[in-house]
Image (cartoon, rainbow, N blue to C red; front, side):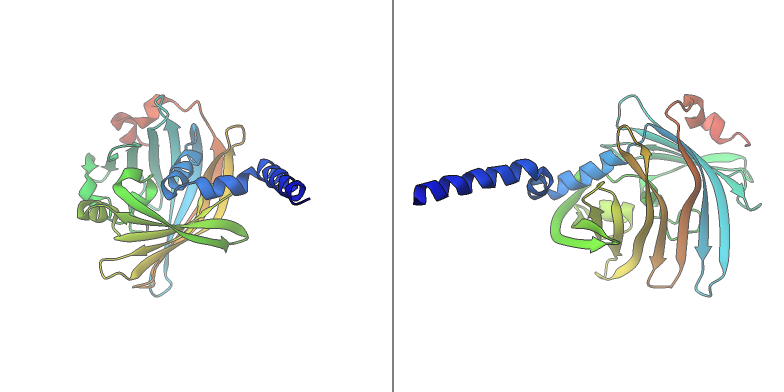
Length: 270
């Protein structure tokens, strides 16, 4: 009789694993795999969008910046080319930013300043700087190089009704920390789509200095299940400044022209 019960137990265990693959897979994923899956889930073949960036200072005063964005994934499947063109207000109109977001090496980023009629390259050491005066940095606008960080799974939590892994990322070198602008980052990554739902950034004193909250995620490519964050807020807890990012319009556009992602187009008026 005991032997029969043992056989039944084994069969039911196998049955449970067979019909609950996600639960089994979750336990098998390393923190690095979770992060890589997130990077892969956001690799959209191409998009066109119009977005708004709202910058709020310590006194609650707001500055709004509108821009157009186009992106395209290169044929290698790893390099994402992204162009930002600022539309308003007048003091930023015409500014362009072009990024080649590589998978395994530092990004290439150029900024065009119409007032100077000049394009300059943003070097790695400058990527922790503010993106257009906001609480987002240039590093925040692209995917990190996975191998530059040591990852730890700190457990699980629910964020806005989404089951998430809590993944800690620590730069492996001081240079990587300087380039990214933090000494530790803790992210809550959704088990459904592998997209980050919130994050805490730590400074050199080991204190949280800014926090990200994701308000909305959209599936851009329904066939390949690719996603983009289309609404988020970055808050600087040290100075009470806040920046809000939201797409007003976004569409899947895999046929974007390669001409968009050149220095010539970067300097071209809209």
